[in-house]
Image 1 (cartoon, helix red, strand yellow):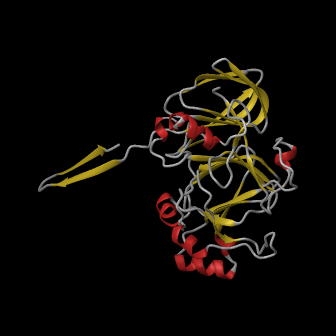
Image 2: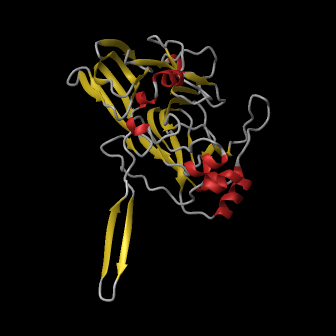
Image 3: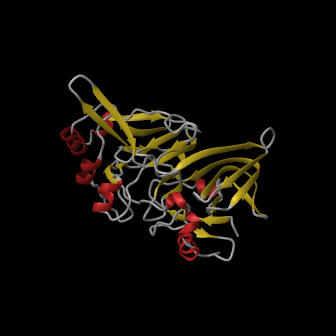
Length: 339
């Protein structure tokens, strides 16, 4: 059994809606479904296998029994499973927040930091996200604006529509606005430092906690320059590489890919229906489904109509050191690849 179909853990955060249940077929009994953790080995919300002899077990239990070889050689550098994939239904605004980098998070929280990417699956009229600052601000101004509730005045509001992609590096202040559906691929972390929450209260009737001192310590206060550094991928960094698949059922009816020994493949179905096959096994897929193909699975074929995100782990980018030799009459500069 080389194709594992996954069932998510579900989260009922107060800003969530019901579209993931109604439109994406996510099975959940509650009224509010804010997030579905589609590919997860995080203890706060593991995903479960629904087929094969591992049916009913978590993805982490499968990895523990089969061995880390199913993750691929590129994952050897990670202590834990490297990524977490979610569907997010923001019926209301999310809090203004920031995530720490690995160094700060491992030292202070005992888990990875969080770099992430957002793929906008749908967005209402005039929908927008907060993404970094409009201008550089000092730590003192940052703290003062949090205290005075004027932080929104200096945040960069980015209008979005279906198909937009944002890459959010750790340390970037951000928030998803209301009436947006998002597919998120992130590091395997559940650390969020909240700095502003519109004065809302949680289920206990109390205002939700803010994490101001930690946010002050980790936030990049310089404006973010949006670029296409992931090209030709949707997103590409040391933690994940994401590619977009589109089959229209007419001109493009089939895709054949390969899962090497280097990395597993995660396939998240955003829309459409059809079949996915590997090693003689054929499974049906539909909108909202999530699949895990272990490293070394070989060729797989996807047929039908399909919008999907395919996530893999590449080798870590090579580190380059610069050596400078300043002589009496000339200067020599050398680049050394220390990967």
